Image 1: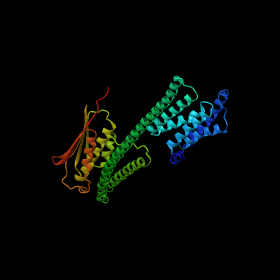
Image 2: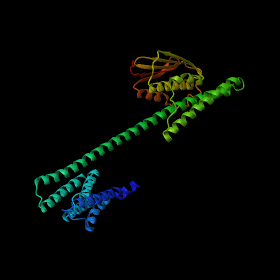
Image 3: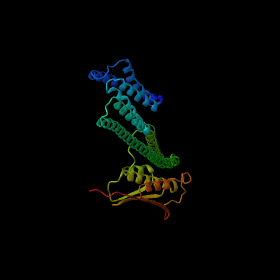
Image 4: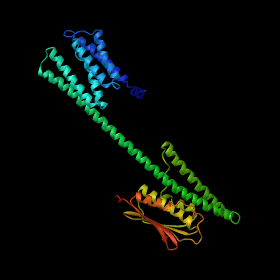
Amino acid sequence: MGGVRRKLGFDPYLALIVAVAQMVIGRGASWGQREVREPLDLYAIGLLLVGPLAVLLSRRYPLLTTAAGLAACDLFLIGGYAYGPSFISPAVLLVLLVLRGRRLMAWVMAAMTLLSFLAYAWMVGNRDVFHSVWILTSIMLLMVVAELVRTVRERRAERERVAEEEARRQASEERLTMAQELHDVLAHNISLIHVQASTALHLIDANPEQARTALATIKTASKEVLGEMRSVLNVLREGAPRSPTAGLDRLDELIERSGQDVTVRRVGSRPLPSQVERAAYRIVQESLTNAARHAPGAAVNVRLEYGERELTVRVADTGSGAPGALSESGSGNGIPGMRERVSALGGTLVAGPSGAGFQVEARLPLPEETS
């Protein structure tokens, strides 16, 4: 409802507050100044209600309403009514002009307010210089406070805008990361499913037990694919937290499900940043996928070297004389995807033939260990 009222150009709550304040203060001031000022009558009450009405319509008619509020204040003073209550509306209207970005109009109307108050003081014979300085100081203080409030609000809005843009950027980067990881998971597991399905079909009559093992691997791989897809979709739809990201602690599970002859050697050990560990896992995963696709039956050696300044991941296969069942089905994005992932962390990746086989070597920079 508040947004609708703003679109229509109304400020009912502020106008109501100003009306109540002027009437209450007007009653008190009138009683306190009853010996020197005129008591409130219908005409005075009508003038006090002009200000709240001007506040109500100030968003739509800023100049007209501010002039009307100032005129009502001057007429209230000329009528001989109590000092105090009629000053509220002009002050509120001037502040609203500043806060809404109409600064030039606000300062011009502030100057008009100053001139009208000084003219009234001289008209009633109050020509004290200190009184004039007090009027000037009061109006200047009001405008300076309004400018300070406007500055604070603008800076806060700018900070919120920057924070919102940063949040959108981070969300976009997170979606890109999830898409890349989803690609890696799908590529690896679908390749694995294809290889194991081919094995099962080939052995289902001659060796049912080994075929059963291949089918069990297919079940596990398909379950992981479905789980990863569900996790990503939940994030995209609801912003729900993701399941734990794959890391090197799941490397043995990855190798077991791959069904390949894989040897893993670790040189050294140290804690790794999550993004580095995730990248290393995905590199091994993609390399195993490429080996299964292009060199089925080849032995694969995985070497992880934990250095002081970098983690080296080396995956090499011995090659295979048989053509890969999936050698023509790849998207061609495996190695470029690995290279982009490594480059994003400030590392390097080299991939190419090595003897009869193929080798992938990635170097991922590590932060210094803290004692």
